Length: 301
Ligand code: CP
Image (tube, rainbow, N blue to C red; front, side, top):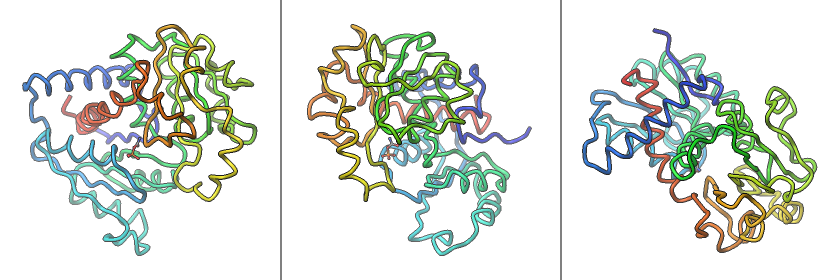
């Protein structure tokens, strides 16, 4: 059977994505009931992190361990790719030693090159263009807390960057309507938006949020944009999510943020702890959804 990669949400069919989130929910129930099966005994993964991570790394490391497998963490400081070994060479070598690769890199092209050269599944643990693992957890969380997301209205506020891009793909795959409000000059790429008939740019945060069932934001200065922080604070200020903005959404709206958050910027100091916030549940669901993804790519469910 040909190996499968997970570089964007478009690498899976809508049916496969639904099965993944259902399996993640089942793994969560089993873990809490103490009935989880060690489905990945004998499997080893390698996690290449070219950028910092807390949630993604711990979810993969703890997840692999809980399923009976093991994971090797590789950072540029202590690996040859940090000294310039070509990514394709790394892929070929690691394919001889482990069963699955996970990589976080600013360069989506590097992740694609790794996947092309690897004989084993490759998972995008976040690039500048996409963050599909976060979307698995977000969709699991919405459905856990609010029911099916298909046909719902979702608002994305802020930077048209990797999280926004992945929400555009999610709108296609899960069948919800997405309204995106970004400051001018920070919109997502037109070629990504064009095929998504149910995703559209709107003029203001108010227009995006009005009647929304889910409101989502992300940091204004993602990793690699830190030097633009002061300028972005000014441009993005009207896009801050706070309780007053959420009051304009649907009565039972959910708020999600992938974290880490910058309180006082894209969120105020209290909204993450508002009863409408599912951010902490989503962070925990990274564990279960990434376990389901590992099982799926390794062919054990
Ligand atoms: N949301 C997210 O990917 O968190 P980390 O950067 O901590 O992995």
